[in-house]
Length: 327
Length: 242
Image 1: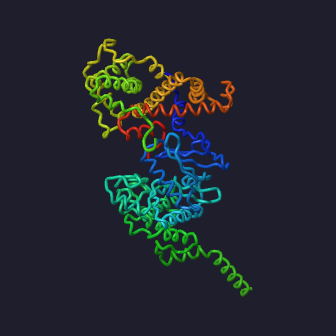
Image 2 (image 1 turned 135 degrees about the vertical axis):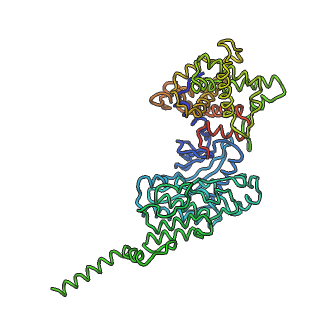
Image 3 (image 1 turned 90 degrees about the vertical axis):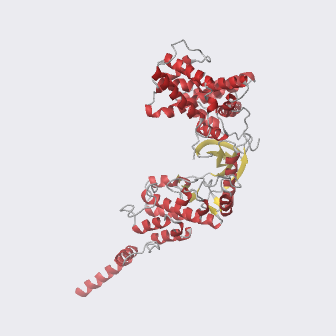
């Protein structure tokens, strides 16, 4: 038998998964990542002469195919600058489902944090994420898997929320709950199956409590994302809700925002993504945030910080007047 | 073939449960072919056996499996077949060691002719893993063996269907070329083979798809359920399980 060194085994792994796009408009250039259902390839669309990303199932099994088609349809419904647009969907000769989407340049959110993006930049990215998720919620879609690896930040600060493979529309949630122990109408999952990522998953989602999973579950995920943006790590499984000070260099108002978004009880969280984003925007503008009732001293310090330039100018003016009076 | 796997070979595990004796025997032999090499290597490394002892233990394990219908007792709901087989193997070797019941060297019946020299040659090219990594070692060697079997099958199929040139390019580019320090380019392969570049890429594309088909068919045979097949296929293809 032919001896296969480790390098050859790794190559054959790639070869065995390599999709056959022969005779189609796409030319595969390289594999750029892999996930639970399949791999993503950088490819060239010969007809439009542009590069695209192709997400291709590893295996042609019906359950994964239905899930992937559903993901494609969900994304197609969500036309928003913060959600990666889908161009095409189809099947390969070996029956594997694929879809073509915009090839996103840039870095993942975790990479942005790792290279030390300053806090204002991280918070602005968070605002863009909130905008995309709020848009999805307005169309009845819940993402259910918000995490740094699923967010791309482009070279001009544009933010794209990716991987809607676990996304669910409001009617589908009800259908999933109404048919316990069976696959839902699109064959995506079974009742009670835990879908999501530990650390970023709301408690009700981790319990498989399908009826309770809703927009506020995504708000929990956004809180966990904010936690990651503030301290560089997800909340731990043993202490999912940050208590006390996250870190001395993290503003207490943002810690309060994070805590509120990640409250164990959905009812205690922000009611909408817009409210959460509003609090972050107010923090960036130097205003008081709704999640943090500040005392007089802290309010004075915040106002002093916010109006530092005006205060310096007034102080300089008063000092000058004083000097003129004296001399 | 919308809605189902494009595979026709049935599970060997189902075969060893067949009431048809001939089918049972064929399925059993195919299972031995699919698993003997990782078993032998595992016994050599995990149990620190000499080559001769490992050969006897490997043959003895499969003989015992046949006599006691071990594979027919596999429950797909409890573990993957690969894990079940390794657990049974550990129990078998431990029992043999404890009771010193090992067959006298060379005296055991040879169930199937297995190329232990080939396996021993491969072992010399491995790094010996630490004890804690034996699960991963068995998995890695099983993947290597599955790919090795698929390469052999593809070679045979290509030769029989007049596509020897396809296989030669595949072997040169995707196996030998990747093991070299500097990966081969398509242009270099075209120059080397004397074929036009487009023909080289077309032949390679065909051979890769054929290789995928053979690998999946091998996995289909070596697994018991759709779920196990999918899990093993994703594992072998290097795709993360969510």
